[in-house]
Image (cartoon, rainbow, N blue to C red; front, side, top):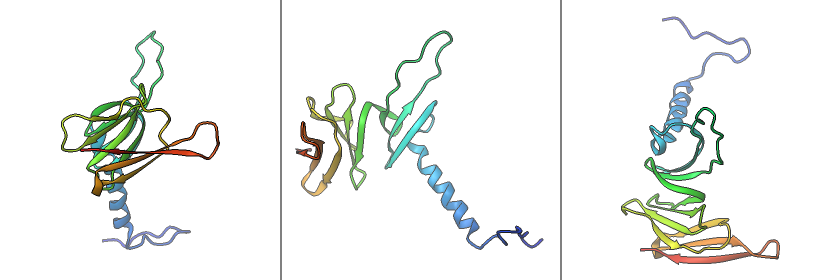
Length: 159
C-alpha cells in the first residue's frame, strides 16, 4: 500500500477524512426521506422527522407558460398543500403550517390520519411558533397592525 500523497499546500490527508466524509453523506441523506421519489424539486427546507417544505417546479409543456409556483408542506412525500410557513415540534411528533390560500392554521400529528384545522380564518402572517407539548398547546405570533414592532400572540390547544 502506498503512503498517502501530500498536497504541496495542504499536507497529508488527516485521520478525520473518513469521519468528515461519513458526516457529509449523513447530512445529505437526511434531506432525502421527506421527498424521496418526488421530481422537479427546486427548493427544499428539511425540518427533520420527515417533514419539509419544498417548491416543485414541473417542466412547462411545450407552448404553455408556467404559472406561479408556491412552496408546499410535506410529510413523508405526502403533499399537505401550499403553505406560507411550517414549524415542527421539538419532539418531531407534530407540525403546524399556515395554509397559503386561506391563511388558516393546520396541524398534523404523525399518528393522525388527516391534518386538523386550528383556525380556518386566521388573519396575519405567522412570524414565530412556540410549542408547549406538555400542555398540548401551540403559541403563534403575528405582527401587529399599524405599529411597527408590535405583535399579537395566540394560543391554540390541540388534541
